[in-house]
Structure formats: structure tokens, C-alpha cells
Image 1 (cartoon, helix red, strand yellow):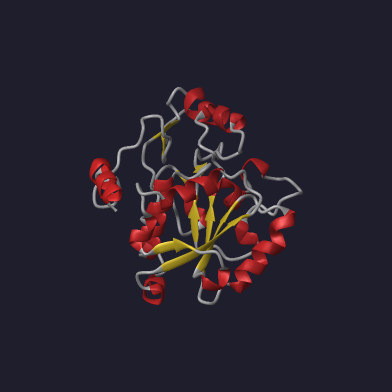
Image 2 (image 1 turned 90 degrees about the horizontal axis):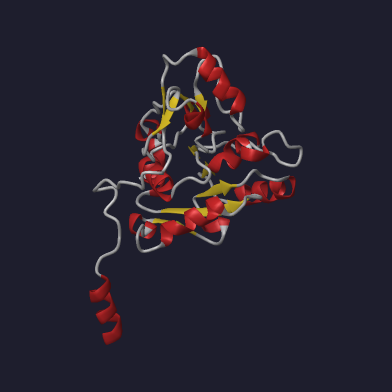
Length: 247
């Protein structure tokens, strides 16, 4: 016990004070894109043609955050004339159409389902499903359980059984082999329940978009309540989404 107390005193308090205090991320972090609507059409079309995810609308210049993997190639190609990536990690949306943007997302709290707060109170239990992902999204979700983020202090926990959960948190492009597993897990969660699509793969298929081996858009299988874009979404992006949508 003395060793534990000694270690605690030496380590100090390591948990982040977010959301009470803002967090500044590393300068290389790519967050919410800021689109120049007055950019020359030729530059926009060049970026759209080069985008590996077909995430840029060549006519309007809007970027689909549900497809974007935040590679930053459009910013490099246009030398910042068309788009610049900010350090804003608050990227989640309650509607799929809201992810097609010039860089202005509606406030998530205004679009949240208020009855969720009444039903779940100060506790939210989620079952995470890796539906054929590369483990990047899953790893950054696991990070939320470390002392720095300490997700459980907000009353949010990931559980082993869907029968103990209030909803499911899906990552990965939903391969054909995982299709039935997702449906079975969803059916096992007691109603009312919520569904979260996390990462470009779950939202649109990501790098596997158009493949015959995946389902892609989770919303084609089950109704999605919350979209968290990214490849993978930063832990703070996920934390912001959970706190503002459910709490």
C-alpha cells in the first residue's frame, strides 16, 4: 500500500481536464477542413480528380467527411488555396448529410436525441463491434480507457455483452463475413438502443469503397444515430461525440 501511495504522489494527476479545459493537439494533426469557396474551379477539380477517396465534389467544392481519410493530399496539391486542415477535432454529426461540408458542422448537441439523456441518465454502456477493420479505430477507442482520458468518469463504459449494452459502436467496413454478426449483435441489444458508426470504413466503406466484399455504409444495414468520421477518429473526436450527443 505504501508503494502505491508513493507512486501516486510521484506520478501526480495525469487525467486530462477536457472538456472543462480545451486541449491543443500536435500541430500535424488534421482536423476539420476549412474550404475556400472562392477557389478557382480548376484547382478544385484537380484536387477532386486526385482524391483517393472521391471525397471532394468537383462542382461545389464540398468535402465528404464520411469518405475522407484526412490524408491531406488536397491541401498539399492546392498549396492551401482550396483547403486547409484545422486542429478542430469536433467532427461528429447526427446526420449523414451533415458530413458533406465546407467546414461548418452543426452543433452536435442541438441535433442529439434528447430522450436518450432521459432514458440512459448518467450512464451509457456500449458494445464495440470490429466489423473487418484494420484495428486503428479500435485501438483509438481503447485509448479512451487510459488514465489520461478516463472515459468511465463520465459514466460511459464498453461492455462485453450486447445484452448489457445501450447500443453498439461499429468500426470497420462491415465485411460480408461480419454482416450477420453485426445484425445479431444489434438484435441482442435491448430497446431503446443507439448505433454509432465510427471511422470512414463504417460510414462509407473507406478505402474499400465499392468493393463487392463489404457492406460499406452501416446505415444500409441498421439505422445509425451518430457518425464519427476519421481514419481513425482521434480519441478526442470520439470523446467529444459521446459527451455532446448522449450526456
